[in-house]
Each structure stands twice: as C-alpha cells, then as structure tokens.
Length: 113
Image (cartoon, rainbow, N blue to C red; front, top):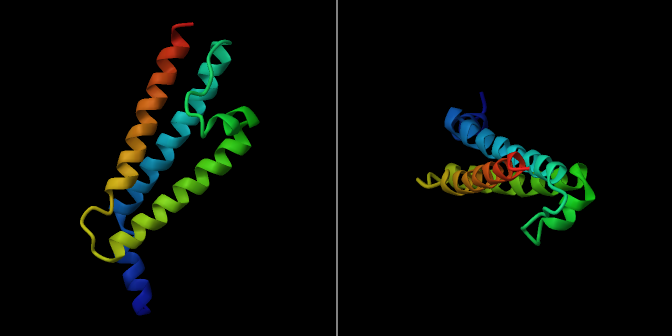
C-alpha cells in the first residue's frame, strides 16, 4: 500500500464519512421539505434570497448548486482533517444543523396548510 493510500484511509475514516453523509442528508431534507411546503402553501416562498432563484428553477438547479456547496465544504473539511486540525468537523456539522432546522421549519409550515 502506498503512503498516500495510508493517509487517505486515515483521513477519510468512519467519522469523516458520517459527518459528510450527515451534511448531504440534511441538505436533501431541506430541499425536499422546501418543495413539499411550496406544494402545500401557494403563498409561501423561499425565504433565502440567494437560493430563491434556484428553488424556482426546480430540483436539478437547486441540487446542482447545493451539491457544489457541499463538495466544497467536504473538501475543505478533508483538508483540515488531513492537517490534523481538531475542528475539521465543525463547518459541516453547523451547515447540516442549519439545513435540519430549515427542513423542520418547512415541514411545520406544510402541515399547517
């Protein structure tokens, strides 16, 4: 096994994949709950002005943008972990938490209609 494979296996360990998967899952939850709420509530709209045009464009557009953002976060997290930085997990966990909160907010709106 090459030295770089040892480093990759040490960095991309179980914790790294759990955190990364949590980020992606929370992003999907937020996106799908957004469309669910918009389907239930005709007067509702995407509150985030940056994401609003992508939500209006449809799932492929929204998922393309969110995937690029997540890829950047995951790559940055990987590089931090590779450099033995203790808080490598902080950014993806904070972003996943924000998506989870937003997704739950969306579901609450949807069930009120």
